Length: 187
Figure 1 (tube, rainbow, N blue to C red):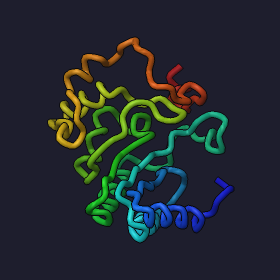
Figure 2: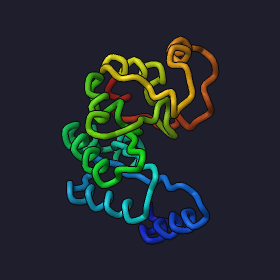
Figure 3: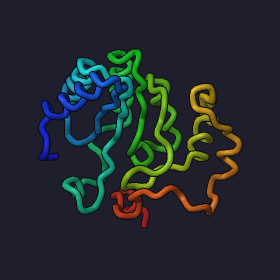
């Protein structure tokens, strides 16, 4: 992204914090960064004082600068280690695994970030790529012996699972305007 440099982004976050807003700022892993780069990003976000730290994993999309990649340049093990470090450096922030987890983790690995310190996931579709359904995410958690925190997020997991695959119109997003490399390889 060439329109604003890092310092501009930090200034924007500082203005938002001064206005009383909680800050949400995170990372995209697997773009070619080193483990040191990942720690440096966590420290920078610590200095800024984020209350929510979304951890995305690159999902290469056709037509973007990363469309020559088949997958993110980070292993599941490295992602898990990174989440553990982020939890240690951000003990009071919500560390959430977000975009890219569905295409970069095997189905039986998706619970591992919780064991490393993640305390949430973003479920459903993302801005430009499809995600996993909320019902599938609840099933994943249950298979790993976990349950959704319904005290923080007020919903009925059974109702969500019963609606899974419902033909009702989903919320409008840009999903469908981009195709991930994982989707292309499934065809």
